[in-house]
Length: 120
Image 1 (tube, rainbow, N blue to C red):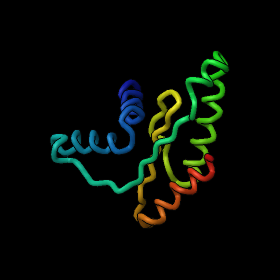
Image 2: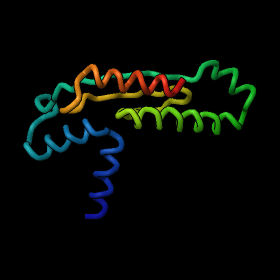
Image 3: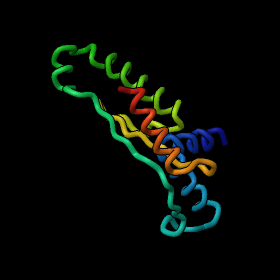
C-alpha cells in the first residue's frame, strides 16, 4: 500500500495537476484518455537567462549556483502572483498561470505581467 501511495505521488509530480486528474478519471470511470479531456484557460510564459553560453564560459562550475539563484527569483515571483513554474530546462523556465473560478482572464493576465515585472 505504501508503495502505491509513493507511486501515485511520483505520477502527480511527473504529470502535474492536469495529468493527475486525467489519470484519476481514467482509473475511476473506466474511460479512455481520449474522452476525459477538459479545456483549461491559462497564460503560458517563457523566460530564459540572456547570454547563458557566455556566462557558462566565465563562471564554469559556479554557473549552477547562479542558475539556482535565478530560479529562486523566478519561482518566487511566479508563485507570489498565483502562477506555477512548470518546467526548468537549463537556463529556460516555462511558467503558467491558470484562471481560477473566481478570477477573470484579465486578472490572470495581470498576475502574469506582475510576475515578469518582479523578475526583471
